[in-house]
Amino acid sequence: MRPNRKTELARTLVLIAFCCVWAAPLVYILRVALTSPLEGQAGTPPLFAAIDFQNMQAVFANGEFIRALLNSLVIGTVSTALIIVISVPAAFICATREFKGRESIEAWILSTRMMPAFVVVLPYFILFRSVGLLDTVTGLVIMHVIVSLALAFFMLRSFFGELPRDILEAAYMEGAGAYRTLFSVALPQVRAGLTATAILVFVFSWNELAFAFTLAGGAVKTGPVAILAFMGFQNVQIGPLMAAATVLVLPIAILLIAAQKSLVRGLSFGAIKG
Image: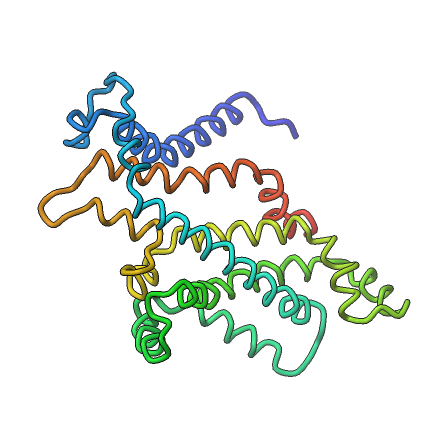
């Protein structure tokens, strides 16, 4: 049934309101970042203040912040690749095979997402210090893999679980083993879901602060940790802080826009199949 004009208008207003609420903080950050340091110092620049790039220039001239962004890029890329490699076969097995203890394994994996970060960070701090992984890229990669593995597992499990069983059974009957069925039959079918999972895992790694702040921050800083350098005890550099936040958000925004179609298709994969 075609919705009437009042329903369409109400739906449009709701969507506009949602977009305004979502975009307001980003617009504010960008506006302050593109204001002169003097006008932006109070955090409330004049509405029609001239566009000024001094804050952005100061951020790009900050070598420590640029190195932190590169650290975030390396940690996010490596941890995402490892998470996908580990979670794909595990999710495929749990989604397509019946075996004893499967529900217990899934419940245990899910439980790793239940605890607050600051509850588990102390044991990992002690463990990493004892094995020399504190304040290293390797340590943060391991931590990000541990934290995001459950997310990737359950997303991929959902995508594999929506595959028609007839296709998988036909592949087995034709002699394809589990390895060939996974890579030649199942993975091409869930390519969009795999892309969406990888993007979300990378975004979470890029934005992660709690573990990066606790387990590193001296020799190895990530982007979110480096932003804290613009906030002193008695002085907050609001203009450079907003400019740094803009630079930190920009790669993620570009990634999400570039992969928008794959991301939406992947996240709605289960809904479409259902």
